[in-house]
Image (cartoon, rainbow, N blue to C red):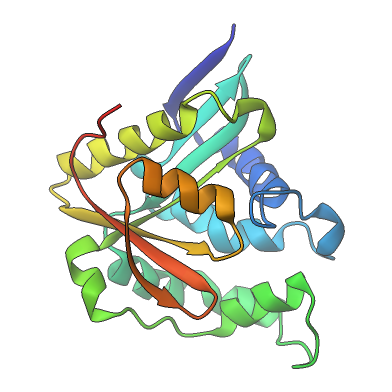
Amino acid sequence: MGYEIRRYHRTDLSSLYKICLLTAKNGSDASLLLKDSDLVGHLYAAPYAFFEPNLCFILLKDAMPCGYILGTQNSIKFQERCEKEWFPELRKRYPLLNENDCSLQASFIRNLHQRHVFINEINDFIAHLHIDILPIGQGKGFGRQLIQKFLDQLQVFGVGGVHLIVSKENDSAIGFYSHIGFQELREIGESIVFVKEIKSIKY
């Protein structure tokens, strides 16, 4: 059957969790680093699937999900909705750990408890995205195709720009986004904010 990209269906939710976990350590498997394997999916996959499924696309290999792109057309409104409908229960479930705990799980939990503040420059790039692909689907051009699907959908919604945040340690992702036309906006701590106007990617 080969590879295929299609829209998200609610039966894909468990696959989103799995892929998110297997790419959570700067693109590599975080299974052995997290006590709760669902944590990262709760933060970086599921809320997008629930709140904005029209912006979620799935990469399949022989009918099995092996990658996805998801995100929001308005980061501020999305964050506000998460604060009301998603984060409160998660914060009860995952209380803050000792500040000396340097584990990946503790880092994700601290991020959960933080109130996100958006920088002014983001206003022109109000959408944001997350993309994760398992090794079986990498290096074949599907990352570009997923992003183009996402940008095309944003264009339909009338959105003019998108941003994403990448760890400074994730060299492959930094190279990929630069290669397909994302521009570095600024650094925030240990991360880099990339932005792109909504227009077709030139191959």
